[in-house]
Image (cartoon, rainbow, N blue to C red):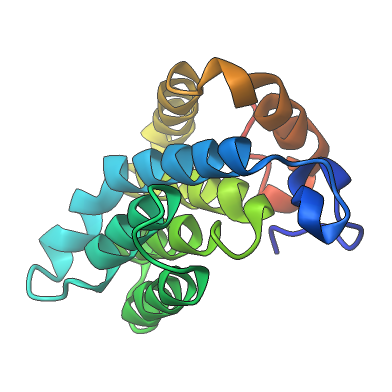
Length: 171
């Protein structure tokens, strides 16, 4: 589970009663896409013929640019998560990261889902004794790419939801 029972109004758009602006929502989607794309090769190595996770990332970015609607991006995210169903380990987590990145268009709070699954993918891609270090490295890579406008929001969101995101943001 990556979503809290009570939604943080900072991650709900203004038109839905929260305080999140459209430009910041778009930045969250683009950051989530970058997180997912960073580990996408772990899926594509296992399933090079399956374009669904890559398409989901593309749809998330296209939504942020105003080129596709939310429903298309959300559907692409669902298809990416469907690509993960019969997989295990790094490939599965990478596909989930891509799916989560696309559905940020629908629910901004999925931004941490993309990041958390990417960290889980990085951890699963290395031998067991190296997984914690790989996860910390991936977490730092993600944080280094946070746009200034959303940095404080995302870091606070990570702090608040770390427990329900498998404690992957301890980096």
